[in-house]
Image (cartoon, rainbow, N blue to C red; front, top):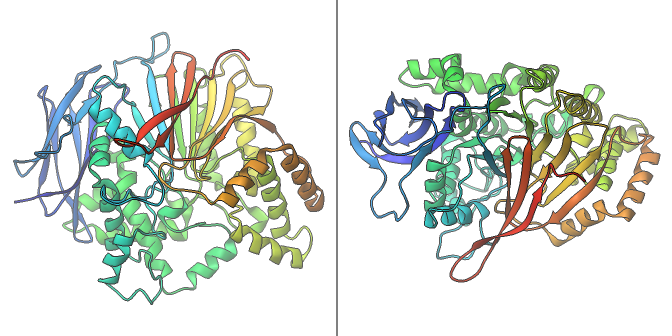
Amino acid sequence: MAGLRLGPLLRHVDWDTGDSATIWVEADRPCTAEVRCADGSGGSARTFQISGHHYALVPVTGLTPGTATAYEVLLDGVLVWPQTGGGFPPSTITTPAVGGRPGRPSPALRVTFGSCRQAAPPADRRGPHGADALDTLAARLAHDPAEVRPDVLLLLGDQVYADHLSRETRAWLAARRDLREAPGAQVADYEEYTRLYYESWLDPEIRWLLSTVPSLHIFDDHDVIDDWNTSASWLAEMRATAWWPERVLSGLMSYWVYQHLGNLSPAELAADALYAAVRATPDGTDALRAFAAGADADPASARWSYRRDFGRTRLLMVDTRAARVLAEDGRAMLDPAEQLWLRENALEGHGDYDHLLIGSSLPWLMPPLIHDAEVWNAALCRGERGPRWARIGEDLRRRSDLEHWAAFPASFSALSDLIEEVGTGPKAPATVCVLSGDVHHAYVAEPRIPSTARVFQLTCSPVHNSIHTAVKWGFRLGWSRLGRWLGRGFSRHGRTGRPPVTWRRTGGPWFGNQLMTLALAGRSARLRLDQARSGRPGARLVTVLDRELTAAE
């Protein structure tokens, strides 16, 4: 009899018709996975196999728009979800009322987002990072039926940490192989990646949350390794090691299975040649390995970015890791094809959406001192001050994580120009928001550009992690007047000039485990920041910001 190893995860919910969704599951053997909903809708799919593991992405059709319906999961006809004795409400699929077309009202949308979640420790052991914000959100939703749930959860990177493992996972690895050999206490292959997902997603609160709130994902560096694709010399050094090829292939393979597939709509899945190939063979491992090897060798051969339209809100989730151009003379956050994809999807139907959300794991607008330091460092690394300074610059880049949008000056300018173009004129949306994580603190920043739309950098991190006190004070300095003055010194030394756009911080910085929520209705937008606080009888979410973004200044 087949058993449920992981899931169910509610992934794609159709906002065009409101009548379909997809559910992701992992079983312990080949089987047929079936979803049955209380309203009679449902669907089934046969599992596919990768490296001895069995997965299915079940299309659910026949849903009624504007409703919430409970569902069950069966494997080969045997009920496996919900599990008995869990103490959680039924898992449900909530569909939007159909709307959002020109001339028709769009259903309100609540988007909760964050990044950087190390798996929570067992309930009987105090963890090093305090209360988990996502776990705390799940507990609040599960125990208060009146609490308004997010319509979608955006996970903006570092969903798993391949290079920073829990004590339990290190012990599991030590029983499997000799940790004195590279890569040591880091994951090495696909099987070890599966352990990270089990540790993270089998947490009871998280498992229930992901079963009932649709989630969309994009990777950041720790999903593969810290500072992934920092520079050409970094990549050359990694490729020269014996362990890196298997690590990066396993990272991309596991991301495709556990995260990327669920980002795709049923139409995109039907057109996906790799998905068809994997499902057409008893074992899709070789096909997926070949794809991952090609994606690593030539990032332009794969696209991890994607677009989702939620009525009159458009989301563009952008790959800021695998799509980089690393050659110093042509350094770019996005390769030409990816940059063109971003531009075309931002401008397509311009005037037909009220809000544009750009999901970027890395912030566009950083504390000014850090921005100037990264632009200065990029100038050194490309040789503007000679070979000696170039060597110093590369060392600083790696030691200090100088690899955000500012470290790719041409890409920073291109994104700034695109945002201004989208946000200007009679067809401009009400807001353009860049949603980011990575930097282990939260803030709101606004550029000074002559746009019609309100433009925001909304950064929220971490969901469950921590930050060293020295780094915390460094971020505070980065936003200060002194930091701006120091940044001008970097600009003078690097001969970089001033940024093409200026900005100001209008909220934060906030430190702690936290989540942001955007509530979008018509052309209005409201932002809330909730922090997880430990206490008795348990952790709770405390609102530290509740702000109308579209109100007149």
